[in-house]
Each structure stands twice: as C-alpha cells, then as structure tokens.
Image (cartoon, rainbow, N blue to C red):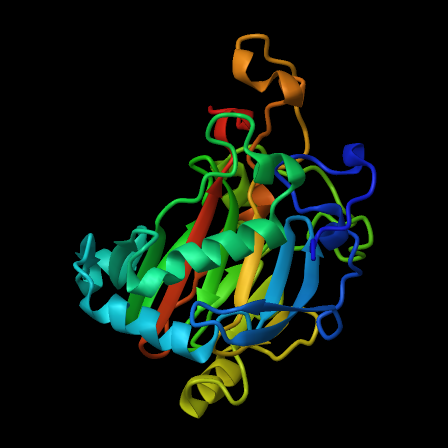
Length: 318
C-alpha cells in the first residue's frame, strides 16, 4: 500500500517532508507505526517520531534490522576506506572537521544490496511526491551510502550537510550515538526561552548565535544519546554524567534507529534561468541553518551509515 497520505500539495515544499510526516505532532514517545521488509525479506516493524519542526527532524525507531546492521558494520571495518582521519592532540584541539574516524562509501549493490534496499524504502517513506517522481534532473537522486567508524573520542564538529543534500538519513548501527542539533526547535514561536526569531543565513552567524546563547548538548536543542539497553552501559553512564538528562532535549537511541532531517527551507524565489524545472515554478531553496549539527566525541567505537537524497536544480547554490 502507498505509505503517503498527502494533503493539498501547496502545504509543503518539494525538499521538505511529505505532509503525512510533517503533520505528525511533536512527541518523543508516540508516533506512527509502520513496517518494511529488510534486505533479507524479514518484516521489520518500526515507529516514526516527529521531534522538531525547525529543522524538520524525525526518529525512525528500529528502522534497520539486526542482520542489516551487522552486515554494514562488517563492511565499515573491511570495505576499502576512502580516507582515514587521525589527528594529533594539537590538531584535535583546534576543532577542525572530523577526527579519529574511517570513512568508506558503498555503491547500491554492495553489502548484499542493503544500500539499495534502504534507499528505495527511505525514498518512498521520506521524500515529497516531487522528489519521488524525479521529473527534474537530479531531484531525489540518492548518493552512495557512507559508512563511518569512529574511534573513541572521534568527533565531527558543528557542520551542515548541505552540498545539495536535501534529506539526510543517519542510522546508528551499534547504538552508540552523540548527535547534537543545537538549534532544533530554537526558532519555534512556542519556545518561551528564546521566543522564535529569524534563522541565520550563513554558517558564521549560526555559530555566533550558538555561542552567544551558550547552547550546550543535553540542555539545548536535541541531543541523540546512547539509549538504555543499547550497545554499552559504560557509554550510557558516561553520557548521563556528562549531559544533564533533560527530557525535553535528550532522545535516547538504540541499535537500528535512524534520525532523519531536512536540510533546506521552504523559502523560494523565481529563477528564469532554469529551464528544467518548469513543473516546480522555478523554485529555489536555501540552506536551513537550523539543521546545523555535530557528532560529539564518541565514548567508544561507533558505527553509522548515512544516505543523502539530492535536491538537484531546486537548490540555490551560493
């Protein structure tokens, strides 16, 4: 059956979530119950939780099956690495980019075809009708799956996925988490602490805003922490000591969970120089800087798998 139950098309923008997802109430505990068949034909029940509207963030609980996770973890260890990043303590203290990690890329049919299976399911579940139909060249195209293995203390400082990537699907393979969105719900009009406000239009202003308000993981935004019953109780205890367990900002994740977020906002402008996107009324979309996020220092070995869906010519490039 078709998972999508769309309302009027003008109520969403092409690079955002489909209406049946964006209309879910913000709730960490209750969401929509769905199922998929994993790469090995086994039924996989999962839940979708809506966690933030600015940026749009969802949690797919139990999205990746155990066998899929183990297969991808094996590939993260054994697949040829694109690059390995090990920085000295001096370089690490400069907080530049990603550190202490291996990165590799899986084409669709690698790892028993798991990347292709997950890309197809994620596209049906998470993309707008425009992105699914792909009538505009490059719209909705899925990149090869990225696998990252972080060593203990490996991290990726505050960054934005951007680069034409409209939708990010980040899966926690062994349940070790640590993803922080400092500005999640920050610009919500119901946010009594900050009372909404304009979203910055560049990285420098965004980082300055985070610094000015002294935003901290575990207290502000959304922090995806290793959950109880996850990979290791040591990680859990360390995170609980390091981050205050504020129910409103901490989300506990488990092996097989995936966080989904949308990287471009709904604003648009006319561009008469794009002949390919007549069906989209020449809409171009800007980076939603509220989707800036970081991988906080890993408490132990951590495995993640990421899929990105492209926005194609609907994205305004700076």
